[in-house]
Length: 67
Image (tube, rainbow, N blue to C red; front, side, top):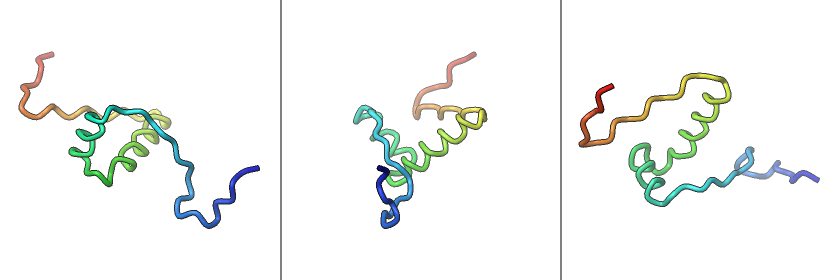
């Protein structure tokens, strides 16, 4: 039987993902620690809709590779 979510603050299911601590911290540094979920949801919506994936930002302090 499905859980009654009528009293829940969040109306969506929660799903865990595995990410290294270092990568998670770097992600938070770029998007803000309270914006990680919003960025992940946006990425999933774009992927499912067949939209182009956003380009990765250039790492700070590294020159762009020719190509």
